[in-house]
Amino acid sequence: MLLPLSLLLLTITHVSCWRPWPNTTTNLTSTDLQFGSSKKFEGSSNFVDLRYHMGPVMTTNITVHIIWYGKWVPTQKRIIREFINSISHDSAPHPSVSGWWKTVQLYTDQTGSNISRSVTLGSEKSDRFYSHGKTLTRLSVQSVIKSFITAKTKPLPINPKNGIYLLLTSADVYVQDFCQQVCGFHYFTFPSIVGYTLPYAWVGNSEKFCPGVCAYPFSVPDYIPGLKPMKAPNGDVGVEGMISVIAHEIAELASNPLVNAWYAGPDPIAPVEIADLCEGIYGTGGGGSYTGQMLEGRDGATFNINGIRRRFLVQWVWNHVVNYCTGPNALDQ
Image (tube, rainbow, N blue to C red; front, side):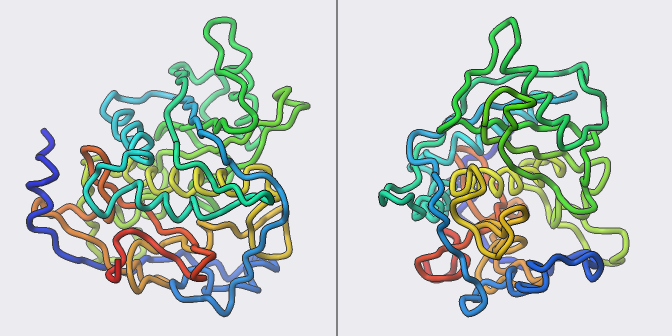
């Protein structure tokens, strides 16, 4: 049973911890060498050259269509649905999910139109029988999406301009590069595979494969003995980790849906985007391996923003107006 948010907010304290970044000294790209650890530093204004490359951003009402791939329990779905529904819900207590989205809204297209404040849940489809198996490649992720936009019964609507197609895989599904390089990714579908160019994202539940990497700080890596995990606010470590990754990918899809709008670095094939620049930062002072100041509720759970009825821990995003990472739980807000 969830306690009323007003009760939980009475005794909030600030907590912080250090993020155990995996060793990434091998196989570095030119972008990695250019930005290094500075891209994870709250105040790295002198190192970041985020530019607008004249492509579209999502300026009209954004609709998120979810594909639940694998086996999901109802409570897991409710946590994720509430986070997405909270993006446009202005009445949540401060600091709020909608307050976090306000930074994303600062980004504009070449006409000066801002990213839409409206993000809503659209259609949902379930694939409980693993139609493409339990191991997916990046290209087979697109094939899964195709199967649901071309389904004979209630296909997902086709919406290239303001639709986001979110493929979520359960804890027993492995996707190419999961844990080693990514906890999620976004791109656009290829017409040769799907028939349409649609912005999409994949995010996986890391509970089985790598919770210490993709669900930190609610789980910690085995190679750091003595480090205690934080208490998850909604009681599901794998899904709690997914929430921040989902936020990351939705923010980047809204600001760079066709990989030709807002990004830093010289490489459009592997761009450094508005959430990449703040990866691992959840509060004031964050940078490098330090997560920054977060909040702790009366129940001992760690979070940094409030949704409609739940609390979440979501990374900050880059604010190009002030040239550093910002979030609604900043101590100067």
